[in-house]
Image (cartoon, rainbow, N blue to C red; front, side):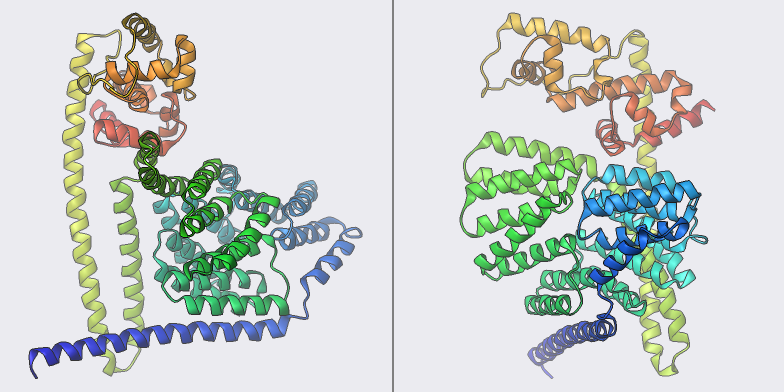
Length: 608
């Protein structure tokens, strides 16, 4: 066989293998839809509206724990239909449970509160509710409630762009579920991981976890989450390039909706958004706009703040497809505003990048700079090498565990499958090699951090010898004149500088509310003049200037105050004006080259 023939054979078998795998996946999804249809036919007589009416009638004549349970069921049935009614039922359930000291009712009602806050986009308050119960809920005693809290926690971290914590939380829950073989916990763990992989755009893994979770939901005969899973299958099929399969999935969705019941506006809104996305990619813009209008109406009328940023992103993309750049820019900017309201930083980051490009096209350099500054700030505060390494390590650990499980299964099979076992051992060896590289990289980073730490201490000690009374602000670059701004009068500049130095000595910068406008008010000048003075005299923008002052102040205090060093990192961060630990870590590392936790640890060890 000549070389060209070999290439042809290899190509032929590669194409056949790809087609076969696609067919297998489609057949697998088809099998799940058949099982759903069977479940729907068995349960469609259980009308949810009839169930709501029955429970509403029962609650007025119920007492004690039974009343609390009925109110919790009503909250569960209403949470995707009418959030205000759901909140009222949950509030009443919590009051009844607390009066009876009914602990199971209390924790379920508090979970409902956290979940309802989540679906309205109030991630911080939702996480506060979770944290308040974290020590009390044991997975052995309350496995289902524990699983619901952990899944919600993972989802919040995913939505905030804290992907390493989201993945760690999901994998930990999956380990517990696999050890206990609890089907409900397994369905929740796979739901959390499917959400995580969807957001980092690993659609194949997202679909795998979605289908695994769906398998356990069908086994439990729970139709409540069926609609969400069918929507996820459709969305991920579209992202994987199989739009035909996605549209078939939505046809199936509409079919079971007619046979069963409406899942409620919360689910419907995201379904219509996803359908709009698919029709847009097919060039059917009128259909896309129709579904998107319905979705936006549901989102706004129910205050689903969580859904709004993505709906506006789809609207912006639809404007771009129809060559309407002006309205596209407005929609992207509205999406950023909506994302800021719920701290969805990854949405702000991606939209800022798009707006930079659009404003370049419309020749607006001022706006380009504005969104570049926003993009850089979000990127620096959300992501660093340690997070990326942590994600790699977590995924590698999970892969090794899965490989071990496969190896044990293969040992029980026929001897003819030894070739598969060899492949798994090879994969394990590869993981071990990867692990070795990770360890070597870790050691190198550790040594590098020690060198950076020692240099920092030496500089700090030398600085303190020169001046024990104040922390000097280091000017990072030469004075660069901003030719685009109006020249500043020297008298005004000197007055602003003199007042600014006085405020520096008073440590104005440790106020967490400190910003350009407030500082300008204190100095009795306008923000434009102040910004120019900082740019020209300090060789820096306002954010970098404030970070420089804060870190310099912090270094001196850490060196001199042993009790302060023993405080929690969150307290230390807030003491110098940072409300967000991620932002604090990013600012410290950008300035010093190491994380603050490492610096404090080394300082304490040397002191001891």
